[in-house]
Length: 43
Length: 272
Image (cartoon, rainbow over all chains, first blue to last red; front, side, top):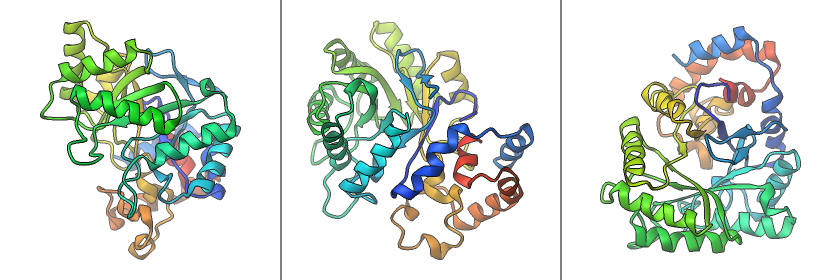
């Protein structure tokens, strides 16, 4: 969701109880450290 | 909810798009209705599907996902303009029913509109490159659909940078509608197909990008702890590029982050 050029990701759920995390995703604010760690994990 | 403009189109979408490939597969119709009710009820608006979803399920023939979405639209009474429907054409729907030639696109769009019980699609995507059809023909067909009001925006899925550049060149040269939306495979684990030339091309041309396999079919949620967890799970076989050992090795260093943020893996991976 924060990646250059990306408008929005597709995510899905098969059960209603899986929806909570999906619906809350846009409200999560990750620290710069966290974003950096995610970036490095994918390199 | 803060919406995001989809490239240079006048379509605004929620920051997460619901993947409708589960409808008629891992979610039956009633469950699908509940999922969509929750999604739209929370202020989200964009739903991704394709004509071929979910033809891979025994007993299905394709179109099941669109049918469920159409039934939900009718049942839920949601104003059509409050929902952004993204669907695709090009995958095989039967003998001779595939690809991106004009005749098939003009037939397939009517099938999708009927299944979705709507008179327009917000975004219509070419599902896969068709080596047997020139971009000129495909873009010409899409342009006609836009002119007829059956499609608001057009785009493509699974193009590389060279293919997208060529499609844009053809559209500009012929004065026809261009691809304003791209749907590439992209996630934290598998970045190579989008980052670099393709991402820069999209930024340069203000193309809206909706990524699929954003959670690597569940592997990046951490729900598959071992190969055994994925066995027998419907979506366990969907991740073409994610081996269990590699996914486990990838997720391991992120555990402290997850604990610190008190988020679930799904939320963090969508941000990455």
